[in-house]
Image (cartoon, rainbow, N blue to C red; front, side, top):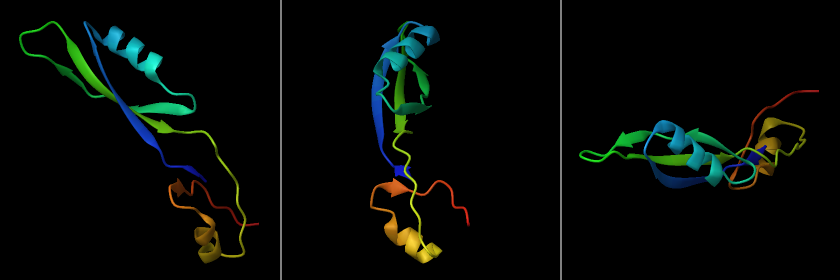
Length: 86
């Protein structure tokens, strides 16, 4: 399981490379960029984007006797990623 956490950052740049650079500079540790729709500003030579980052670290393993018990162990704000039986 891992935490479900996202954060968004608005950026502006003259080109897509600049947007990508700014988004990379704003990426928090442990987060990956999951969305960054780009919008052209009418009458201006500027691109705007809102980058959305999701937490992808803090993966933790848990064990339980059955699925109901496993789901009961997942705290609020966390998600199951994979279930395997032994």
